[in-house]
Length: 360
Image (cartoon, rainbow, N blue to C red; front, side):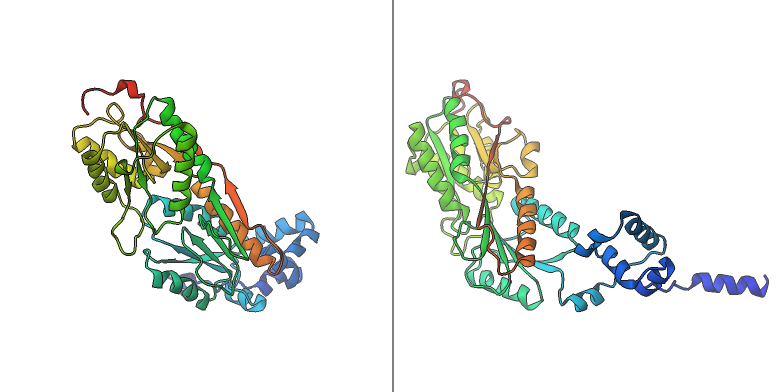
């Protein structure tokens, strides 16, 4: 092996030095300012010809140029980071919303921190402060109350609070509960049981008011003996788990006769279906079940779950978009409430009351 070959192999084994903005600009014979504007997709890039922008981007890919994030942050005095406060991430509701938040933020060049509070009041207060101490430019609250004034822009998902300077994004619970009950009534159900949400969810009271209003309109009696509140005896209720649906489903079977259940969410509906089947009942032949949220698992259960769909990923995307608008337009008046329409998704867990057999 010749000395020259040894030298070449030695050089090739060394990591290549990253190319900087100045070197990229020299390669293109353009000013560093022009290249920076194109790379960072700044508003001033609109004045640069498309041919030039394409040439810059092609050269950046070819030379494997990566923008110096820290230098950009220091020059703009911004961290391009936001915070998200959630009850927890393991259940379908929050996970679906986070997919939307993440996709929108990454598309805009932002990253995020997530803090979960598990329904504990002290952590609900601490989480946003902790995120702000780490330099986030704004905070998204997911089904979490805004209990203090913050120094950064705020957007809430299912917040249902009239807080100055906060944009609230939610589904119309009045319409959602009506379409669900109307569906059951159209199938002949009159004896309907209910799961009322746990006290830790900001949707609970709004959804329950919707149920009472819909029942009144449809001539349905809401019987206390056929109503179970999730996590009723828990001091600090947290996010739903299937087990609470199972336990409360068994309690309902012991206290009253009903032909259908309208559950607070899909998670509790899944647990209730298991309880009904363990008791020897068939769904929907003996009892129909309607959930709420349309989490991913709802379409793959046995039977597939009829549910009220919240556009969870869209809500996440919209929350991220609204927060970035608030960050870019601090001090300006922004939208305070965005109400989205729900959709009833009819699957296999509901059927006509006339089909009820002798199982009950």
